[in-house]
Structures are given as structure tokens and as C-alpha cells.
Length: 98
Image: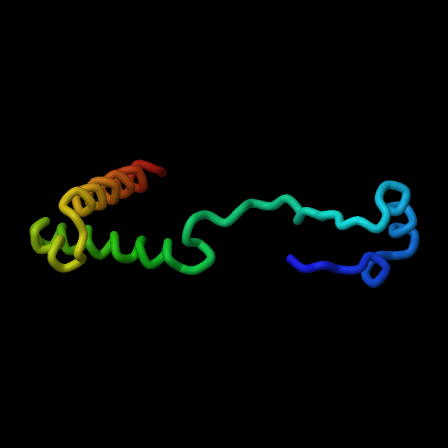
């Protein structure tokens, strides 16, 4: 956030109106309301993890054991099992949706 001088960026009529409420002080003008980005959406982390999780599930379906997946992806057994379970649920939901 940076400081801007109102007389440099605001129309004269708006500046006069603001001066009726506040003069010589700093005021914060919030951003317009919009949906906030979810975790990892802006930097691509979410996409990377989704791809990794799909790969874990694909390998599991093709016969890799949980122990092999733990060693390959350096995740805990609990994490691998959660990824497999959640991916399986998503696929069932997607298949059930017409």
C-alpha cells in the first residue's frame, strides 16, 4: 500500500466533497469487494498438489502399494490414504453427476 496525494488523483469536485469530512489526515480506501483467491490459487501450488494427488491415485490404481507411494512422494501413510480416499470419492461423485 502506498500513499497518494488526493489532489493528484481525484477530481476537484470529489476532493472538495472529501474535505467536508476529513482534511489533512490519511484515509484508507479499501479495494472493491471481490472473491478472495483460495489457498495456492495465485502461485500455482494448488494445481501442483492436485496433479501430484491424481498421480498418486493413478499409481495406486495401477498396482503401486501404499508403502511404495510413501517412499516415492515422501508423504505419511495417513496422507497417502487420505489422498486415495478423497480422489476415489471425487471420481464417484463425478460419475454420478449427469
